[in-house]
Image (cartoon, rainbow, N blue to C red):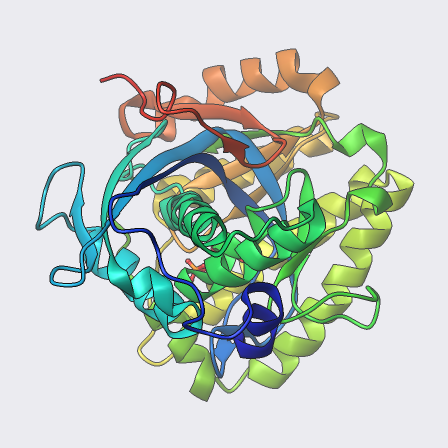
Amino acid sequence: MTGPFFFTVFGEPGTKRPDHDEIFYSGWQSPSNIAIVKYWGKKEDQLPVNPSLSMTLNLAVTRTSLTAVCDEIRPGLVAVNGDHDHPFIPKMQGLLNRLVSEIPCLGLLSFQAETSNTFPHSTGIASSASGISAFALCLLDIACNIMKVELPPDEWRQAVSIVSRLGSGSACRSVFGGFAVWGTSPLLPGSSDEFAVSVNSRVHPAFTSLHDAILVVSAKQKEMPSTKGHQSMNTHPFLPGRILQANRNLGDVLHALSVNDFEQLCQVAENEALSLHALIMSANPPVILMQPATLEIIRRVREARKSGLPLFFTLDAGANVHILYPAEAAPEVEKFIREELSGFCENGRVIFDSCGAGPVRLTANEAIFPG
Ligand code: PMV
């Protein structure tokens, strides 16, 4: 439910209108994130069946700028990167429609978006988390501008997180730098199914510079859209057990992060990754997203850990492997990745990233990545 929150923030719907000749502009850079405890399965209005915890990335980001003018004849998102049939339009317009029902003045505007990623959207990195959160930031910024509302930073992030969630669940965690939890947990007072919260105050400083190397085993578009995957949980025989497991794993990850227990973090993170794929493989219809190279990388990561390298893997709903390791181990871990693992990646592709600080507002000059 979003209504009461937006009512409190923006007042009575329809009370303010944009000026006819005004041009509204907003530009934001927003990052992707990697879940350590996975969100898999949803209920009601884009609410998660279990709480999830993620680390926001630093370099894998989307930059979006949005320009809007009053146009009651042709409202909505009319173009992305100058293209009126851009493939991103339906998803972005869906989110805009949702927001118009809460903040009607947005329905009087015609929007043009420019957007670009630091990473090609076909690398298997979750571009919806960065793309949707960047769009949500711009939309809400313009809404605040029209409604002459200035939100304090905490309320602003919460509002953006709610709007991002309506577009793509995992996007609501990208609004925060460092580590964020989305979903109500008795362990975290103030946590909610409607928005993510930062858990940085509970994270040992050793983890704030954690690195994430993304091993691109396959750059193909996702074989199974995550919407289908979430849906498959509605009738999944393991759903009750999964909810218990995710809640327990969240507690364990929060504990590991707070006391700097790297070994516990490795165990739980890998358990989460393999459980996600076990759920996918045992769904109806069953889907296998891992490839032989995924399994070989996993095997080698575990061997390397046994022989003393501090690293663990996690997986999204795809074949690519994320390898996480402390900053101080970067030279030796990255040497291992380059020499022993990159050969299993498509064109040897590895994206080296790390824990990031969250979204950044952009000026008009900064908004687009060159090329
Ligand atoms: O936000 P969605 O609908 O793309 O789902 C994301 C699902 C996972 O990436 C597999 C897990 C997660 O928590 O990010």
